[in-house]
Amino acid sequence: MAHLVSIVMPVHNAERYIEAAIRSVMQQTYQEWELLVVDDASSDASMQIARRLAASDSRIKVLVNERNTGYPATPRNKAIDAAQGRYIAFLDSDDMWLPHKLEQQLPFFGDDERVGVVFSNYEKVDADAQRADRVVIAPSYTDYKHLLLGNVIGNVTGIYDTERVGKVHFRKVRHEDYAMWLSILKRGFVARNTGTVVALYRVTGDSVSARKMHLLSWQWNIYRRVEKLNIFSSVYYYINYAIRGLIKSFV
Image 1 (cartoon, rainbow, N blue to C red):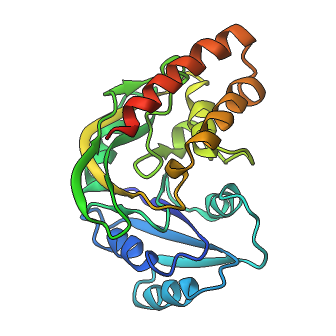
Image 2 (cartoon, one colour; image 1 turned 90 degrees about the horizontal axis):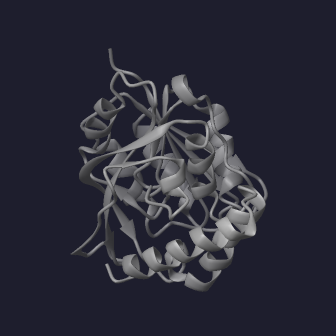
């Protein structure tokens, strides 16, 4: 039996990229999905593009925030609340999935009830989606303690099972995707990697990965205020995170 996958896509002024992102969902080999596009008060043509594509495919649903919230957590949570699928996956409006993404990931949940999350490797591309074999390879498995060392779950690849972990929302903190994955694994669940490249992550001047100094402060906040680790544990994990982040930056 095929289970429905709900795909969460927050949007704010993404007219240059959003059509490619949505079409990458439409091209999935696994067809049991719904795409929840949530506009966070865009001032460009993003919603016109999304509505045009939605008119051609009833699985695409467009939701709107009348005011810009400033946090991607808010539109993502709106989509999660509306989601009808057993599985919830995430795709930002400037990234793209490869056609086999969902088909490859769903079998990895298997019969092991501990597997709450499945993720994969991904490839960095430039603003024009030009590929240069910049593949980010993650470990085959992670749990809470390992994830504290640094986020190996690329949000563009992550998917979780609501029957096992429930509907999990984002907190209004920076690095909100990392905080969400931690909140799932902290409850004893594990995450498995398919070992395949399933997505293209677009690196632009506006992307989070372009703001390295901010990431360092956001990470510290996760350790101290979200996970409430003591100072010694926070320093240990922070050093590990910084080293791993430096290595990843060379990809």
